[in-house]
Length: 226
Image 1 (cartoon, rainbow, N blue to C red):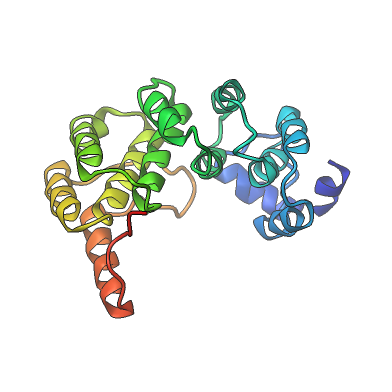
Image 2 (cartoon, one colour; image 1 turned 135 degrees about the vertical axis):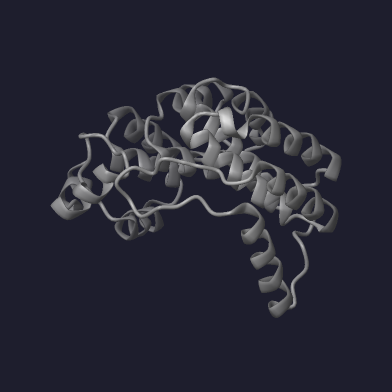
């Protein structure tokens, strides 16, 4: 914690505050957190201790050095219920996506009425769609239906995560691309309040099409299922 505090800056604290980080923040850049992660590598005990502090920078580092294979189901549930910052939700989703529990947690958390729990769940779905996980198209088709039905009435950060999941599903393969584009057309504009930042929620259809063109130029196909 002393090391983290020494790395923080007032400018970063201002930036992170605009994005929703609480007052318990040193303001450590993500580049510095990345360097610490390379030094520490994986340390689940340290990750748990850092998370327990409640400090924003410590929690960001915790998601980078935690061992997804070692985290128990109850520990994941405890962490996700304590998230109150969208960046931590994104970071935690990436961590859980590398766990054998990823799919079961995605199913549970996408049903949650809590905003950040729901965000993690839908973030996870988008990652699963893009990761090449061995899941059939039908698995994602049902989630497209849920997104289309609920996105406009979902909570703020859940809307953003649902939109991201829609994009991820649309980039998975030709069949799902067609279905995702059709769903995006019916959904229309997704409005998300990003506060006093320059962040924007991408247009799903435009993003999927742009990604397809990029893959063509690079000679790549859709996400490979392994």
